[in-house]
Length: 226
Length: 257
Image (cartoon, rainbow over all chains, first blue to last red; front, side, top):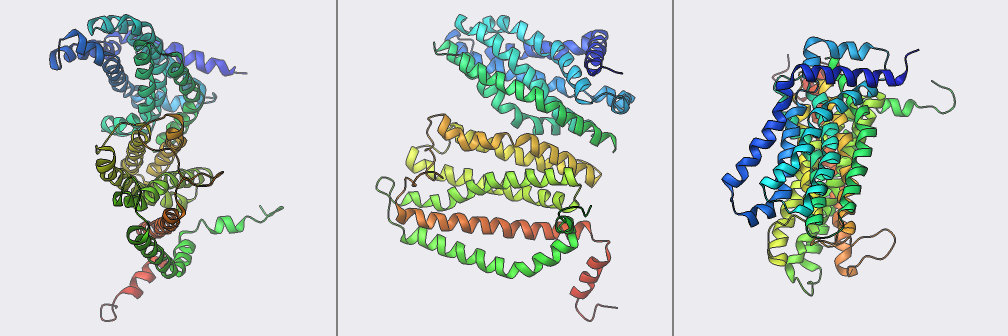
């Protein structure tokens, strides 16, 4: 009897191993995040006070864009070499391995982004009160973004120019996440209660973790019959 | 599957031909109803309703803005439910309805945002503000556009339909947020005037034409949806016998062989 956790753990381990072998590729979103955060003082203003105003939102926007870039390749290589079909005919309940893949994706993109964000915050003069809330909101938020992005990636995996369409589909779904994510940081900087928006982020993450794998499983079965 | 209740009526409704022929009979009445209600509502609201104490005559755009917003939200639910029915019962007609509902809903959302902007300039002093209700309506517009875009991205019609249905369902979460956003966050856009549980916070003389316009807009939506779906049916079933017969009968006598 195959335990239902085997699919989850198996695909988690597989994807982490694959990511480790393609370290350079996988580090790109993180490098993108750091590079783009240099653009802000260059393009807008190096003035500390103005940067401090912009910092919470801008860091969130860049994290969102970096995650968006990385979700394109979530299912692409598996689709191309046929291992996605193998996943579909395996005796696992499809949502579980899917959740494992997304967790692996978050561990190699969202988590590094979260870890690096205090550094970026310092570079962009983010007030000290905002650093911890920034990490917390990014940790929950990028997980949510990975899940929602995976829905879009699954729907567009069989399309050749799927990248732009993926962005069109997924950004409206991302909008509530960034609204609450940067609201948490801004609230902390203003001295208000930042646990409220953080709780809403947590609720979104719970709902996404429960429901997105089902949608993704449906979408993967759909596009593989194409 | 004849045990217990008879579900034939439901499965019969899945026939595009049945839908085409039945709605063909309804259409004249629907035209009359829509045009009549629209005329009554617009003339009553724009010309005869009393002036607002604070806003003067500029409040009259409410008779377009509110019904369009209602229908933009309701239309998304209809699109998502049609998608769900298509996925569950694999009903072609349901997918056609979903596909037709997308552009209509997107247009209504745009009208709601546009009329809101036009209304906002004299009353709030600005065309646009990023408050909760307006932002989430903008997100709704993008969701509609995404569903539309996904439909046409696939070579296979069926895959496009199913993918759009999944996307529409995922985006359904946004609708209660839009509806409740003005109650949860105290922002610039006014809270709900029409409540189910208490009297509306609007004078009856202004409220009655608004009700008429809302019903008129529902009727208009039904009309537009039926017309769109009929065209979609003709396009998809163009190789079927009954459609060819229809096309032949519609040709003028000299061209028929």
